Image (tube, rainbow, N blue to C red; front, side, top):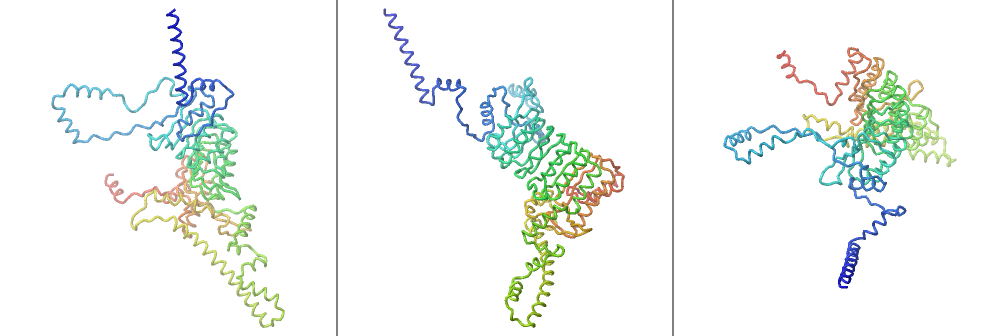
Length: 549
C-alpha cells in the first residue's frame, strides 16, 4: 500500500514540474508546444520579416521563408584575397637574431622553431571535397568586424532564377554601402533581367554592375540603363550580344527626346556585334554627352562601323526629326540662336525688339494724328533697331558660349601651383564630373553650320576612351577615325573647353591593317600626344641608352 502511494506521489511531482517548466518558457517568450504547432500548420502565414541590414542574416532568413533547405542555401563568405607579399627582413633584426641563436637555445625555443618551419603555406586555402562547386555569395566589407558594411557582392558560376532574384530584391536595397555587384556565368533569363532592372535603382549607392559570361537569347540588356538607372559603369563582356541587343542599347544611350544621364563607362567587348550594331551605338552617341568610355573590342566591326563612329565624333548633319526638336527647344527657351534660322516671320522680329520699340509701334497704331515727320523718324528708328538687334544676337551668342565655357572652367578647375605637373588623378577629375555640368546643355542647342541645305553640329567630344581593338577595320576605317581626331583637335584649339576634350585614348591593335600603314602610323602618333598617361622619355635617359649601346 505504501509503495502504491509513493509511486502516485512521484507522478504528481513530475506533472507539477512539467507545468512549471512550461510556465517558465511562456514567461520567457513563448511555449515550445505552441511553436511546434505553428510550424506544423502549413496554412498559418508567417510574421513579416524586417530586414536588419546584415546581408548574411537577411539572405538566410528569406531563403528559409522560401522553403529552401539548409543545405540548399548558398553560404555568404568573405571574398578570398591574394596573399600579401611579405616584407623583406631587416638586416639589423637579422644580425640580432643571429647573435641570439649563436647561444645555446632552450628546448622551448627549439620546439617553436620546428613548428614555424612546418606551418602550411599561405598561398592557397584547402577546402572539403566538392565544396568548391557549391554555390556561395562572396562579399567584401569596409570593416569585417561590422557585417552591415558590405560594399561588393560577387556571384560565380551558378544560376540565378526568379526565386533567388526575388530574395535579392528584398535584401540588396537595405544594404546602404553596396556599390558593386559582379555576376559571372549566372545564366539569366529575360524575366530575371527585367526584375533586376526594376529594383536596382532602389539601391542608391550601387554604381557598378558587371554581368559577364552570361548568355540571354532575348538580349534585354538595354533595360539595365533605362531612364531610372543610377549605374555609372556597366560591363557586358562575353554575353553573345548580337546586333539585336546592340540596337536596343544604342536607343537606351540616347534618342532625340531622351538620353541616359548617369552611365559613364560601357564595356561590350567579346560579343558578336557587327557594323549594324556599331552604327546603332554610334547613333546613340549623337545626343549623349555623358558616356566617357566605350569598349567594342573583340567584335566584328569593320570599316562601315568605324566610319560612322568617326562621323559622330567629328560633326554630323541633323535629321528632320532632330531639326524639328531643335526648333521646339529654341522656341521654348527663347534662345538667341533664333537669328540663325532663315527668313524668320515678322512676328518673331517683333519679339526680338526691345520693349520700348514694341510700345512705340503700338502707339503708332492707336495714335492716328501723328504727323508725317514723326512717322519717318519712327521708320528710321525701326531700321536702326533691326540692324542693332542682329548685332546683339551675334553678341549674345558669343556671350552665351563664353559664359558656358567660363562656368565650366570655374567649377571644374583645380588649384594647382605654377610649374607643377598635375597627376593623372587630377586630369581625370574634370572628365568624371563633366556629365553633371553638361546635363542641362542639349546638343541640339549648340551652334549650327549650314552646308548643302543641311544643319551640321559638332560631334560628341565627351567620349575620351574608345576601344576598337581586335576587330576587322582596314585602312579605310582608319582614315575616318583619323579625320575625326584631327577635327576634334582643331575645334579644341579654336574654342578650348576643359569639359569636352575629345578622344584621348583609342585602342586599335589587332585589326586588319598593317602596323606600317601610313594612316595607322599617323593616327597612333596623334593619339600618343593626347594620351594623358604617356610620359615622353627624358633627354638623360636617351643619352644613357646611347652611351650604353
